[in-house]
Amino acid sequence: MKRLDVKTKTLSWLKLSFATLGFVLAFSHSITHASVRVKDISSLKGVRNNQLIGYGLVVGLQGTGDGTSSQFTMQSLATMLNNLGVGIDSSTINVKNVAGVIVTAYLPPFARQGSKMDILVSSLGDAKSLQGGTLLLTPLKGADGQVYAVAQGPITIGGFASEKAGATAQKNHPTVGKVPGGANIERELNFDFSKVEELTYSLHNPDFTTAQRVVKAINAQLQGRFASAKDSGTIEVKVPQGFQEKVVQLVAEIEVVKIRPDTNAKVVVNERTGTVVVGQDVRISTVAVAHGSLTINIQPNISVSQPESFSNGETQVIENPTVVAKEGENKLAILPEGVSIGDLVKALNAVGVTPRDLIAVFQAIQAAGALQAELEII
Image 1 (cartoon, rainbow, N blue to C red):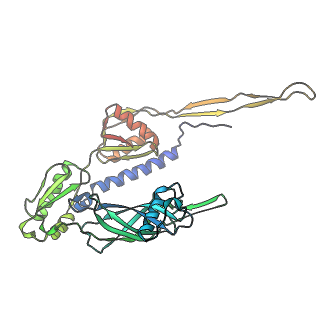
Image 2 (image 1 turned 90 degrees about the vertical axis):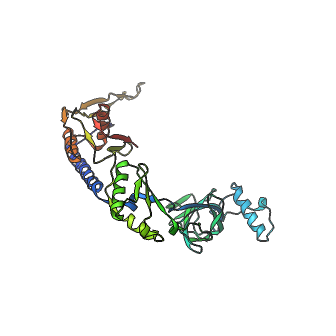
Image 3 (image 1 turned 180 degrees about the vertical axis):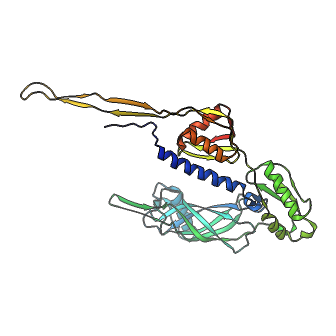
C-alpha cells in the first residue's frame, strides 16, 4: 500500500499549533516592550576583542594524527627538530602521532602582560582525532603581524573517537579542542582609556528611533547635553568635566541606562523548518483569504493470474491502482485590519492553517499589498 499525503491537517493539530504560535508571539511582544540596558544593545568603540591566530603542532596522539599526505606537518616537525638540535630530513619522517593545527584566540580589551586566555585548536590536515594531544609552543599573532600571546598545553575535546575492526564510535567533534587558560599574553595594546575625551557607541541594530531614545536617556542620566546621534547607529558622548580622569565611572553609569529599542515591522519565515516569527508592529490591511488543502491517496490493487498446472502459461501480475484526491472545504474568510499581534493571530486562526501553511498565506498577503511589514525568508 502506497500513500502520499501532500497536505493533511486535523482540528486538534491546528489548535495546538496556533496556541503555541500565539504564546510565542505574545511572549516576544512583551519582551520587545521591555526596557533594555545600553550595554546590551551597543558596543563601545575601542573596547572589543582582537582576533589572534597561529600555526602549531599537536603531539602525543595515539595513531590518529596526520598521515604522510599532509606534507606540511612533516616539514614542520622536521624544522622543529632541527631547531632543537636534531638534524633530520622531512622525507624520512613517517609518524601518525603528530597533527598540524590552527590555533585561534580572542585578545580581551585591556589585557595585561602575564594574563591568561583560552585558545581553540583545530586540525589542519587529515588527523582523525586530537584526543590526548599536547599543543607545543605556538606564537599567536594579530592582524599587524605582531606576536601578542604564546600558547601551549594539553588539549581537551570533550568527546572521543575510536575505530577498530571496521567499527567506529564517536562523540562530539574530535578534531577541534580547547586549552583553557592555554595562552599567556606577552604584548599589551597601548590604549590609555582614562585620557579619552569622547565616547562612541555603536548600536547592534541601527535604528534612528532607538538612537534618539538612547541620546535622551543618556542626557537625562548625565543631566546635560553631552550625547548626540551622528547617524542611526552611532552615538557620541562627550566626557563631562566632572568625569575627567574618571571615564570608567562614566561608562559604568551609561551602560546601565535603560531604554526601549524600536524595531521595523517584520515577518521572518524559514521554509526549511516551518518556523514563523512575527514582530510586534506587523499589521495587515483588510483582506479576504481562503487556504485549501489537498490530500492524495494512492492505493495499489494488485491481482495475480496463475496458469493451470502443467500448462505453458505464465504467471501475470496486474496492477490497477486506485487514486483518490480530496480537497479541503475551507471557506473564504475575511481578515480584518488588526491593531495588535493578538488580533492578527485570531484572524489567522479563523482561516485555519498550520504554521507551515502560514508561510504561503503571508507570501500571498504580501503579494496582494496587504502586509504592512517586511517579509524576510531565510
